[in-house]
Length: 303
Image 1 (cartoon, rainbow, N blue to C red):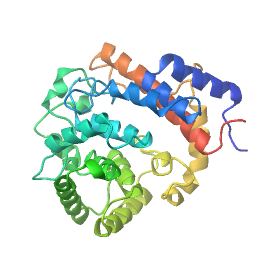
Image 2 (spheres, rainbow, N blue to C red):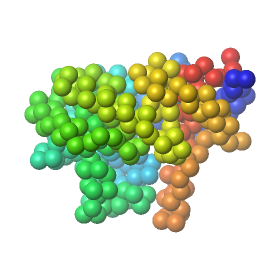
Image 3 (cartoon, rainbow, N blue to C red):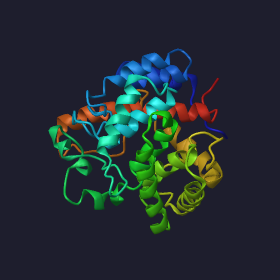
Image 4 (cartoon, helix red, strand yellow):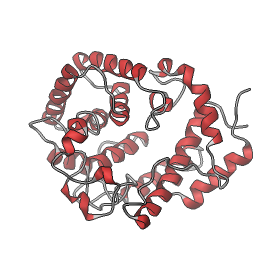
């Protein structure tokens, strides 16, 4: 029997995001449900942008540093892309300017965070160290692949040398890797492979690498979900996870809490209980929005 999110449980999820989620998540869900506007969501997003053009201030909820970071800016660009924001809007112009200065041009990557990550509380995996690049696979996919995907979307504003440098870094990564094993690297690579703009000599091997990596990825990895590869049934990589979708939808519906929200599976109370409480609350709003959007995409909300 096909599992559905009932009308009452959908209403509880909707109310949870509106009442307890961040204004950004509420605005994005409003847009999905046809009762909001892109301008309202953009206004909520701009609150996370710094004067230097980059994004920070907990846009990535586990990273409360006010400083701009590549990971937060990649998320900002993801939302700008989703909102179909015109390239000439000041928030887009400023973000791309920041990325131009943040690129490690020798390696062709964007370091995921900088030393100023320590200006605010954060999860332990965001702590600055000299080993950060090694811990994050040289930043070759997370966040670089996703940033590159969004730069193609805003290509008219992106300096050609920025693309050339990042493409050179991707070319080296593709030559060196048989599989993408890290779930977050794979998510970023999927976003790049799904987009437009990559030259054919990069698009073909990237698609092959992504397809091999999705097929080989451990389905029990709690950091990964079949919805990363197929957020909608029409996603280009949906065929690779088709056999896992039904069980994942059933599990997603079952994971809703009594208050209408969904919760993260991770916890860093041991680092900073107060900061984690804030991050958890922000994550719950975002994860609830994500869950509702997936269930709507797959027709699993009772009509």
